[in-house]
Length: 157
Image 1 (cartoon, rainbow, N blue to C red):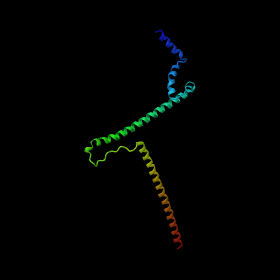
Image 2: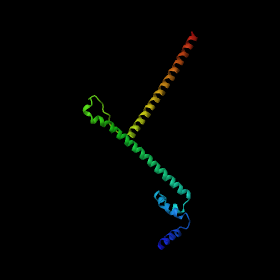
Image 3: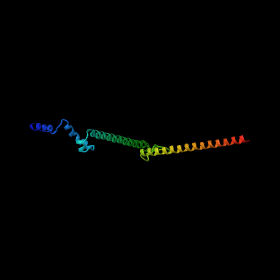
Image 4: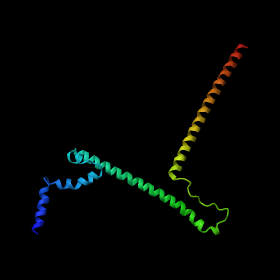
C-alpha cells in the first residue's frame, strides 16, 4: 500500500501544471494527426485547433467517400439480384423475355459519359440555334435590300 501512494505522488509531481496530464495524454493523438512535437509543445494554440479541425474534416470526407462507395456497391448488388430470379427460374422464362443486364461499366463512369454526351448535345444545339439566327438575320437583310430596290425602282418609274 505504501508503494501505491508513492506512485500517485510521483504522477502528481511529474506534471508542473494541473493541465499537464491532459497535454501529455493528448500528445500522441496530435502526433497521429500529423503535428510535429515542436508544433505541439512550442506552437500557437490556434495551430492545435487547426490541426484538429483539419483532421475531423478529413475523417468526415473519408466517411462520406466510404458511404458513397458502399451505396454504389449496393447498387451493383441490386442489379445482380434483379437478374437472379429470372436466371434461377429460367425454365419458366419465355424466349422473348429480355433479362435485366448487369451494367457494362461503373455507374460513375456512365454518369460521366452521360454528362459529356449532354454537354456535347447542348453545344450542338447552341451552334444550331446560332446558325439559324445568323441565317434568319441574313435573310432579313436580303429582304430589306430587295424591298429597298423595289422602292427605288417603283419611284423611278
